[in-house]
Length: 184
Image 1 (cartoon, rainbow, N blue to C red):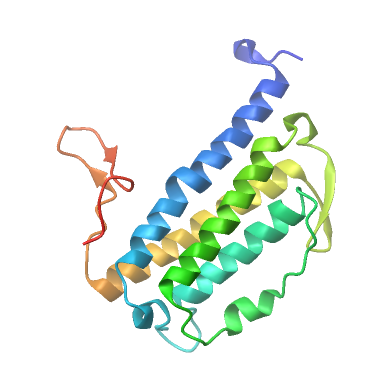
Image 2 (image 1 turned 90 degrees about the vertical axis):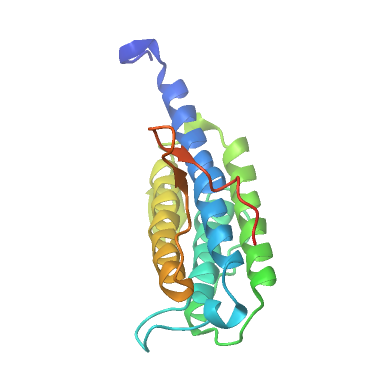
């Protein structure tokens, strides 16, 4: 089927999946890394109040959600997620370990999405006890990581009292810098 602009529905589906991959691996992960690398282990596990999560809990939650929806839900791996433990964790898991787990999960998500047959985007999958399409699952995980990355960015700015300098506007147009800077 050809749609407006000459693109086939299969082509649009592949563009959607590739855009999700770029957002997850090329934007959200590097921003999360920059945040965590600029904080101490203590800051990563601090909570603004009893009703809030720490950055450490949010990173565990991002990994658990992405693994459940993409690696297990679309990729067929066994789903052993214990969602509540992501929020209940109180050990100060070192930043390096948290980042290694997040990177591993994101690499597995990217691998599933790279191999995913985009013609199956509208097929039904049972994820988290409900029926959903692959398109909805991919959209959910992309949006979910984005939302929690925003929380981590805000918490990092508050805890470290820094500007994370994700963009350089010196040329008059925004140029992303989240891959460019070395951690001090």
